[in-house]
Length: 126
Image (cartoon, rainbow, N blue to C red; front, side, top):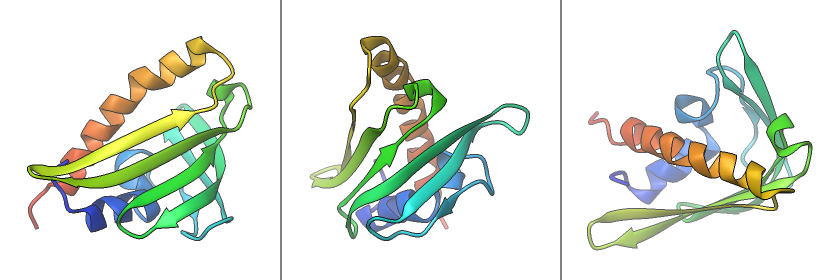
């Protein structure tokens, strides 16, 4: 990632609708044990996502539960860590707890595109 950890952290805690969610769909207060809601997809076909914030370490890590129809209603866990490297920031993403390998593989295919969008959005010069 090109952006600083503080900007990446803000994108996960205050700006999900800039890179992951349908704009205006995010209901989230960045605090541990708070619920979160957002939609992915488009205005024509929305995919609701529900969860609860598990961990917040400012500018370092966020972890939350993730439940959707695509997980067959099973609560999975998303953890994102922002690690300083000599040439930028390494974002380590772990999405775990899938009920089947097929569901895991589906999410594994989608995340790189979403993280690429995150990198684009957060590296735009101001």
